[in-house]
Amino acid sequence: MKTLKLIVICFFVTAYSFANVSTAEKEALIALYKATKGTNWTATWDLNTSIDTWYGIKVEDNKIIEINLQFNNLQGQLPQEIGDLIHVKKINLGFNKLTGKLPLTLKNLKELTSLELFMNNLEGDIPAELGELKKLEALKLYSNKFAGNIPDSLMSLTNLKELLLGSNYLTGNIPKEIYALSKLQKLSLMDNKMDGEIPVEIAQLTDLEELLLSTNQFTGNLPMEFMNLTKLNTMMVSDNNLNEEYISASGKNPPGLMNLEMQNEGATATMDIEKE
Image (cartoon, rainbow, N blue to C red):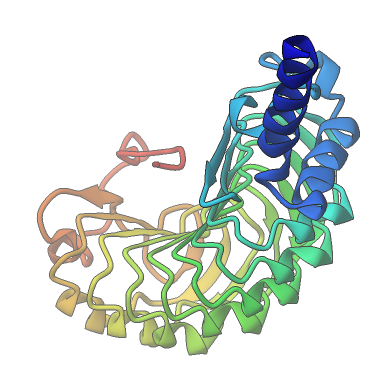
């Protein structure tokens, strides 16, 4: 009789441990596992154990709120089911081997504050649907194969502090509506194929600390209004088609160096890769 009671108790304890997270969320994680060859991950999951023991998964109040699987050898495309993780706040899948286009179901992740998919092989356009993620504070898509224009919808992400889209194949102009990103601290569009003039509206981003626009096809002059960006400590605009060649500068208030032309070909930028 005691044995039967213990079996029943163990059954309910086990059932409860798996019932903490909704079925939809659990199935979404399993879909991610299967779509990205989870058995080959550096740190893999035992699907027979409780979700809160799975590597890189943070559970709070029976909800999956964080996924951190960077440097974990994920290979393949992100599944549509990822959009069922409706409570997740942070996703970091950087430094992996993800391919294909971003699933449009990402727009369902209304609680998302940070989306980090850098250093992969993702391609296609940056989905306009990302503009629906109103709580997003960090969007890091650099070092992929994204093409096309920056969606105007991203200019409605007024909580953004970091917009890092460098080292892709983006084209077109910087949206003039970028002034709406009033909390922006880091903006990187370096190493793309963007053109047009650098909009003066960037000067309205008074919290901006890093501005990385080098290695594109921008034309015209740097707006003198950038002198008012008192928090700016890193600026890179070299290797464009600007009317003058400018020194890439870092340090306190580098816009003061804006009008200094490069004196020789030996002058080099102070930073050539994305900064975290």
